[in-house]
Structure formats: structure tokens, C-alpha cells
Amino acid sequence: MRDIKIFIGIIIALALVVGIVSVSRNQTSEKNHDTPHSSTANLEKLPLKTPSTRTAFAPTTKDGIKEFELTLDEIRWEYAKGPSTALGTGKFVHAWAYNGQVPGPEIRVTEGDKVRVVVKNNLPVGTSLHWHGVHVENKADGVPGLTQYPIKPGETFTYEFTAKNAGTHFYHTHGSSHVDAVTQLDMGLYGAFIIESKNPQKYDREYVYMLDEWEINPDGSNGALDHAEEGEGEHVHKMPNYNIFTINGRVFPDTETLMVKEGERVLIRLINAGTQEIHPMHTHGHSFKVVAIDGNPVPQIAQQMRDNLPVLPGERYDIEIVADNPGVWLFHCHHVHHASAGMVIPFFYEGYKPCCLE
Ligand SMILES: [Cu+2]
Image (cartoon, rainbow, N blue to C red; front, side):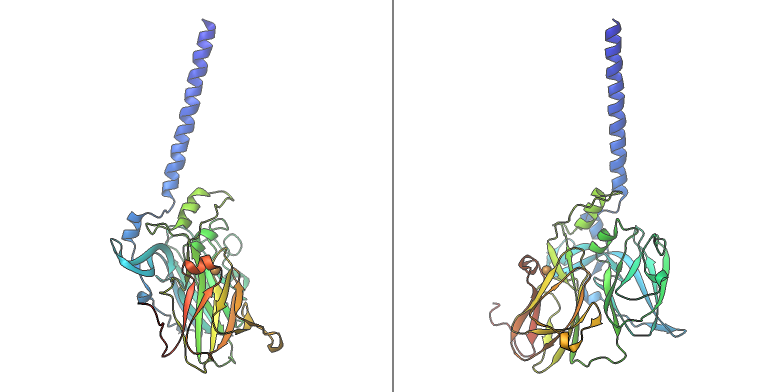
């Protein structure tokens, strides 16, 4: 009899333990639902943004300081043209964006300028803004937990610094901590930051191309947020399965054409804003000269001629192309999987058209 009582006691204790574990699991999963997630239902409600809704900066100058305003919002970004669907005409991804565009608007100043950037965070998460490659004063470096508290949802934060070192740089989120920096970058939070030299080289044209990788689900939701939920609170981040590769937020053939005229000298600023992938950028029919690396001018004697240049995450290359071989060419990533998934730029001479598209 006593044995039976002990046995029943053990069963009841086990049932209680299982119950507690199951309640705690349910609480965890409810908590996960509070994490910002990326569903089609949400996507429909987000403002639709396309390259045609881009707005460039016209900085205001206050007290001798060039002032820019960056507002972070959730958007539905059109990364390619496409058929008409319930979500609109085009192909969309759930993105977090500066001033409603991917990449964020280009900030362009001259070396020595004093710069003020007012950042308003309308995202459901805390964030920060780092000036990649720019030799800012330490307190403006934008690293949460090191130089500032994260900018909470609804808050505004102002960065002020002097644009000391000329060159091709960029600005990007540093997350609310180091744990979610990758999620926030993969949601699209970056833009070019160009500091012009006081004595710039003269070029006939200039292009800025920002390279990036995405995990886009068939319903347009962003895989970056799925992984954020999986790795929450841990130093664990499941490797994303990047399947779309953009240049200035677009995929081929909707990428911005590199248009030239015979005889022109053209400057291209390449910026790899992605978190992981290397992009060997390759020109057809032309070699190019590498004139600056990470914003630093390369001495003339050391300037390499290339036609295939790997660009690592965070790297910037300024390359110069002389337009001496008229026709219709491509400029693309030679990680061919990336090219097939969008990372291609049409490289066309004025007056020349592809022969055989029909
Ligand atoms: Cu690539």
C-alpha cells in the first residue's frame, strides 16, 4: 500500500514538472511573438517604397554645421520590378530603412566640414548609428554600451563630428547591442557617406554602388527577423541563407545602369555593406584602376589594374574606368550564384543597346 502511495506521489510530481515546463515553454513562445517579426499581414500594412520615392539630401546649414535628418521606419521595399500582386506591382521585402529607402540617402560633405546628423528611431527596437571609416570624435562612434545607450523606439539622438578624412565611407546601424547588429544590417540599415577631398580629381561621371545580401522569403518577409527570434538572448545566430543579392537595393535587370560615353573617365565607388559575403566585382571588356582603398588614396605607383576585384564586407574601393571600348557590357559579381540572384550592373555606352532581348 505504502509503495502504491509513493508511486502515485511520483506520478503527481512528474505531472507537475511537465506542466511547469510546458507553461514556461508557452511563455517563451509568447515572448517570441512580441519580438518584431516579418509576416505577410504586416507587410501589407507597411508603406510601399520604391526607387521612385527616393529623396536625396539637401542639407541645411545651421551655425556653420551641415545638418542631416535620418528617420528609421519599417517599410515594404521594392527590390525589383515584378507582376501585380496583392502587395502591389513589384517584388517586395520587409525592410528597416533610413528615410524610407534602401540604401539610406547618400550623405556627401567636404573634408573639414562640421556635420550634425539627427536620428529619429521609429522602429520597434533600439538602434544606433556608426560612421564606418570616418575618423569621428569617440563619443560619436555609435557603439551601444561603449559610447552611448541605444536609441530607444520613439527617441531622437544627435551625432556631431568633423568630417576629417576624405574618401568613400558609409553609415550603418550598430544594433541595440552587438547581438542584433547583424539582424539590423540585414534589414537594410545602411547608406553611403562620402567625404569629398578639398582638391578632388576630376571625373566625367561618378557612380556609387552599395553591395548587399538578403534572405527574402517567398511572401516577402525578411529572414533576418526569423533568425533574430531563433538566436534571441544568446550568442547564437543561425547563418542566414542569403538568396537575393542587391546593388543599391535592386536586383538585375533593375539595377542602376553604369552609363558612359566613349572617351570618358569614370569614378566608381564600391561599398560592401553586407554582413558576410565577398563580392569579386568583374568588368567585361575593360580593366579598371584601383585609386583608393577604404577611402585612402592609393599612391600612383601602387595603383593596380584589375578586371576582377574582391570586395569584402565593410571594404570600399574607388575604381577608375576609361571608356575606350564602346558597346553593351556587364559589371557583375563573379561569385556567380550572387550574379544569378541579382548582383549585376548593365554597363552600357550611350547610343548602344542590347541586341537580342526579344
Ligand atoms: Cu557577390
